[in-house]
Image (cartoon, rainbow, N blue to C red):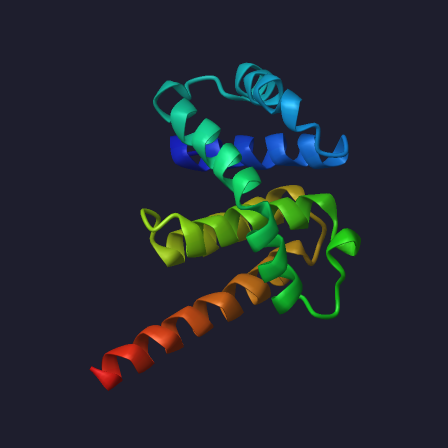
Length: 148
């Protein structure tokens, strides 16, 4: 497992625990520390990535969750499993907010995390949502370039 994939996995596990415990924002750093200590052996170069990603997702949670709701129209956000919801949060953060991550990497990594930790249809669900978002982003970009 690559270090960045392991880091994303720790981000998902941190968000899962935070979300499951009713979002105790004051405890987020303790949750991150616990997850890194427990699962992050060899993660020394990506600890900053984990912390920044978790905090940025929480800081942009309203926008991210609105995006989930806009694309998962048949699934109210509170009815999406905790794993799928937080895997989508990572993918959407990396697609829309963190421009340093290539879109296809963000989508693929989220799908792999969903397949590993979610239910039998989690990978397809995450792929469908993130794929639709990517398509819209790409279409807007293409339209903008055509107008120029």
